[in-house]
Amino acid sequence: MTDPRAELSRIYWENVGERANDPHIGDADVPEGAPSMNIHSQDFDREPSREEAEAALALLRRWAGEVSAEEVATLDPLVSRLIPGQEVSNYPALARAYPDAFVVDEAYKASMPDLQNGPSSLIKGAKQQIQHVGISNFRLPIRFHTRDNGDLTLETSVTGTVSLEAEKKGINMSRIMRTFYKHAEQTFSFEVIERALDAYKTDLESFDARIQMRFSFPMKVESLRSGLEGYQYYDIALELIEQDGVRRKIVHLDYVYSSTCPCSLELSEHARQFRGQLATPHSQRSVARISVLLEEGQDTLWFEDLIDRARAAVPTETQVMVKREDEQAFAELNAANPIFVEDAARLFTEQLHIDPRISDFRVIASHQESLHSHDAVSVLTEGPTFAADSLDPKLFASLFHVG
Image 1 (cartoon, rainbow, N blue to C red):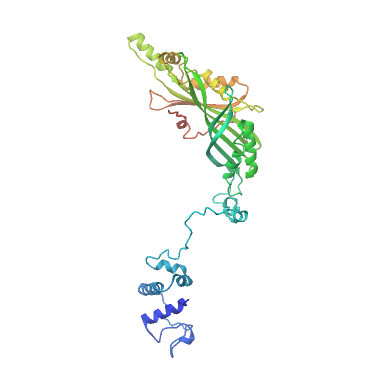
Image 2 (cartoon, helix red, strand yellow; image 1 turned 60 degrees about the vertical axis):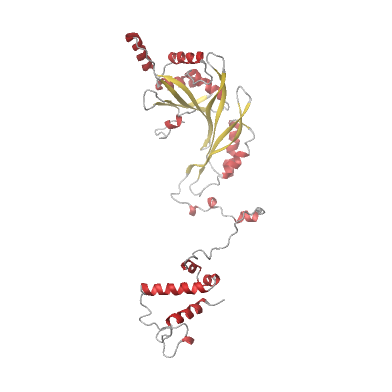
């Protein structure tokens, strides 16, 4: 392989020619009377001009264009980037075909980087504890016990999080999913969720943890008068939280109903009575999100039980199968149960007080007005579990249920 310095020297002499007063490479090459490399002339120490830099660049490009890529790399791999059209000519030739036959062994796995388990020096930002870190919305079919119809398999969205100590960089999030899958074939109850939580707390070496499971629960309901039946679907979530060694079991339910405005009903009747004017009160699809904490020692609150409580509080649930006689009945049912959003929160609360399995709770009601261009909302909490001075800005927007 040609010595790059000798080649540059050759090209230099071909372009510049011999100048006795220029410094030379090494004492042996110094013409008689010319200064050696260790004798710097005043001109040699000065800052080069742009023109001289351009000439040097042209010289370097000419040399690089006449030699092999290996010779360029020997001088400096970055030189190749100065050659027009060859900016990545020294990029390594990587395999582009997927290696189907490649097998990962333990030695290879041990060699792979694992940044999340790195030292605390890798932490970016403030070294503080994170209360929740994990994965959200990984989905799988889960089998649940039901009160009336045996076991039911439902597509379930799972969120799993753990706490992260201040001195730890991060967690291996796939462990949450892998750990949960070990329990996925069981029929789920809070007892099974607790076993899953124990396992991933151990795997991730965390103190606090949370599992939430969301699904749409089908329940067959009968129409008001025609005797037809159809499936109503209820958004339900089970949540198990462990914090500071204390575990809490929570059930969330979205209950969708019709709310007829009491004021509008009275005004409509006034128009009929005093002016013989037909008028209809406004009513609208409404949603209550009911969240309940199970009393300590209670493991079972059937989904159907909580739905029955909601229906007993506000019987104007939206209908599935409807014929004319059912539609008329629904109008009569709404007229018999007009409610403001304040009434709804208190009616649900009255029913929750009856069930001894329920401890703390929260009721969020949203009446999505047909009269107004805004909604009417209320929030009622009992106990410290759901008490909060601040609300999620998107809380009420999440209560919309569309077909």
